[in-house]
Image 1 (cartoon, rainbow, N blue to C red):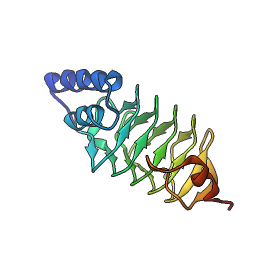
Image 2 (tube, helix red, strand yellow):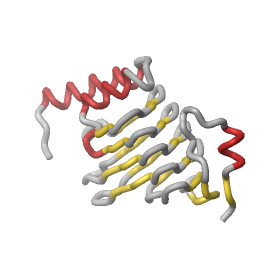
Image 3 (cartoon, rainbow, N blue to C red):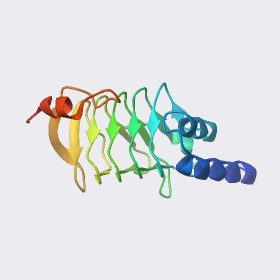
Length: 160
């Protein structure tokens, strides 16, 4: 999947603009779409989010997905993987999501990834995970959307 030099340069320029521009629900998603990130519906992308520099088309963000400040999503290391962030999934600040070569890492619908977590395996829908490496903490019954009150979300957690 070799890319031309102008495409690679353009991709990196758009990536830098997206990382530091305002507009987490407007301009940043637009710039990432122009890079090739597959964005389906409304998403929020926080400041300094790093979305796969060389192969942005290997990332898929579904409606309601939120990526908090300084998340990193990687889809290649010597070979290609893929990352899918499901509908209404919330990725906390400083998280790293990395797909191994030939693998797809899916973050299921309504899932929440705790701040600072490292995710290298798929997360089931409506699951709260955290840690390094990320492990299941609880099940979620209320997705963490832009309108969800944190206290309500927290009340909706159920132990395993």
